[in-house]
Image (cartoon, rainbow, N blue to C red):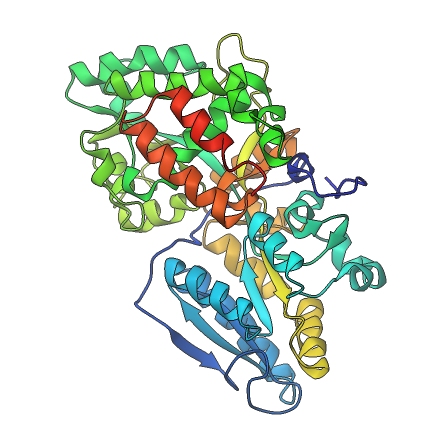
Length: 452
């Protein structure tokens, strides 16, 4: 939906609306940084007066698609080129935070919106793009309205939504379900009932790359929503005192520990990483029956899993309802988009180059085609034809329908919160899954950082 007309961006303003995507924006890639394009340096980098700089992530297919977009723009604008520098996910987060803090960021800042963007806005490091979007309504109107929620702080837009939308999906191995003689779960009770049936056959009910921590978080995001509705986390986001003590929160925390205690996850999940795609391999090699993960994993499973995807063995669904819960089972969570901001420290010429890139270089027909071919749903309204022509049309339609029909499409917690609160959240989630803290201890720990 469009940003709320309240005095601040609300978590629920990430709702309503749009299709979501598939392929990887993942945290892996070569050791970077690597360079492409022209020019160089930070916000004031070299090259001609209009040259701009752009930092983003390694990892295919996203890295290649972004580079192609810049190459097309540079060819059409030889006097206003953009130089790209790429980093691995974790290295990028550290590098961009340090550069922005020192007032030496690139012209174009790639990010996830939400809490990280809010911290840049509060420090006066990124441009207010509200009036630019008002003057370029055609640019705004072709993008999914829900993508602007995470780009909006205090009713003002500070980032250009780009790339794809990516919900979290409950995947399952059809062959294993047939082997055990069971059906996909239609409720949380069904999930718990499936656990002993798969374990009895020597199959892990769920794969999980728990060492990465954010993979665990996806379970809580859905449980909180399905049990108490989006208002439960909304209270945390708004800084409401003791918001983590909500009875729905405590129940969600308890339910996930019940799943851990019932051996619902692969043995040793806390030492498995998502960045290596080891969790995906457990699903497509038949060692685990189900996996809760981002829609971007479809593309990598198709690439790495032999005929698992092309042979029709991969099933998918939205997270089911929780018995007695207040939440709407059509809601989803994940990434409502990715985002490009413009450094407030860039020169006027660099800012104009960046805006020209927003207008003529981002989500062109050629780029939209590439995202669809990679197994993603780009955040433009006119992509239906490209989706239906894709060999992955069935999955992409599911992603489109899940996202467009959701009353609430919520941003991932670690992106909605400030970096400080997000890090504390991920640490406590890891401890919760390791059963080293209780649900009440989790709530007490997290209440201490509300509003930070």
